[in-house]
Length: 287
Image (cartoon, rainbow, N blue to C red; front, side, top):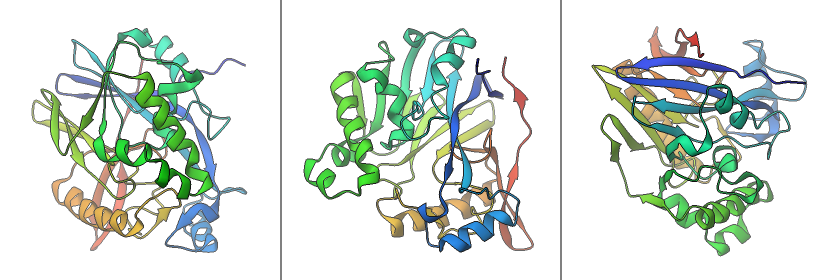
């Protein structure tokens, strides 16, 4: 059966940002941390989001076009963690974008559901792209002693990072916050992984922050900042980053895009009667 591309489009000044769905997964209730499986189920049932097998979660990637070049942020799991994923290549093709047209790829962190598409088939799938990832994640996920101690469920991320480093000799490790191109910069969101980063797109007084795994689901975030997932390498640091980030995002009214929020995962954190909540933003289909 032909899979139709699922996309949404936003204009941020001169930047055209297309949200691309790479598919979905049902996260089991016992994969979440900071809550019991029953609490995770109850929280999502309260907003009618709990399924029989867990919580439905998407895999979003982002294609940025500034009129001169294409920048891809994350590459999806490419079918590695879910058979209902791996839509990125055919969606790019439907958009008229060839893999060789991608000028740069920014990877928010080294988990396989964000880098799997880079190395699917043990190939360099974006041959002309400069690749950016935080040096802390490169160092961590290529460390054999850390890999040996890591939970089995995370082993594939270590293997994929080894492939990434080998297959992309033009990889540029990022050290801290920096500008990638005019209007395109990265900022620190460490905790989920040591080098978890966000991407800020800004032009003409408008902005959009791609925050990857800062938020998982409206039932949990931002209302439950202690709500995490078993893949997080430093839960205390992840919780602290979320607490700081949620408050700042609400104060600024910042437009955010998150990988796993219900598609297209774009909205704002707002304060309502003293409590923080997620407010989805309007969107239009990409074409």
